[in-house]
Image (cartoon, rainbow, N blue to C red; front, side, top):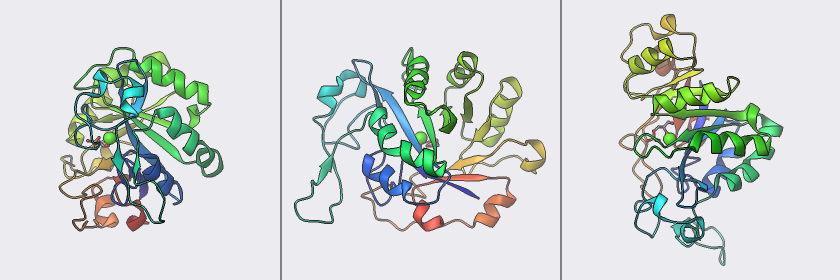
Length: 249
Ligand code: G3P
Ligand code: CA
C-alpha cells in the first residue's frame, strides 16, 4: 500500500502548511497531497477551502484577497520551543516547491496538486500551475487532480505527458470518466468502492481519500481508527491519502 500525506501531516500539524509538509517529507512516503486556489491578484496559494474562515483568523473568499492581504492572516501552529512563532501563514505553491523539491530530487517524493476549481472555475488555473511546475523543473514529480473533469481533461490536452488523477466520490464515477478521457489514476472516496472486483476492471492506481469524519484534522484530537491495509488492498485500493502517514508507516 502506497502512502500519501493528505494536506501534509494534517493531524499533527495544521493542514496545507509548510510545517505539515515538512513533517511529511521526513517519512518514506510516496508523496504529499495539497489543494490550490487563486488569490485576487492571480497567485497560486495552498488552501483547501474557497474561504479562509475555517483554517485562519480571517473571513472571506480566498479570491477576494490579494496575496499580500492573505499573508496577514494567521494559522495557529503547535510549538515545541519557547520563542518559536505560534502561527504561520497560508503558503504559496512556490514556497511549498522550495521546501519539498530537495525531497523530490533525493527521495522521489511526489506531489499531488489538487486544483480546487469545481466550485469556482478559476479560468486559467491550469496554464498557471503547468507553467509554475515547469519553472521549478518539477514535471516528473507532479500528479494533478480535480473534482472538475473538464479541468483534468484540459490538463492532458495542454500537455499529454502530465500525470493526472480523476477525483470523484464513488469509484464507479472515476471509472466512467477513465473510459472517456486519458487519465493516469482513479482518486475515489475510501468508503465508496462500489465496483466488485475492481482490480480486474482497471490497471490504473486507485488512490483513495478519507473524510474528516474518519480522519480529523489538527487541532481536532479525536482518535483516528487505522484501517486494515490488507482489507483496503482486497477492495482494489493501491494507495491511500491519509492525515496520519506517520501512523500507517
Ligand atoms: O485529493 C484527495 C482528497 O484530498 C479530496 O478531498 O476534500 O480532502 O480535498 P478533499
Ligand atoms: Ca484535496
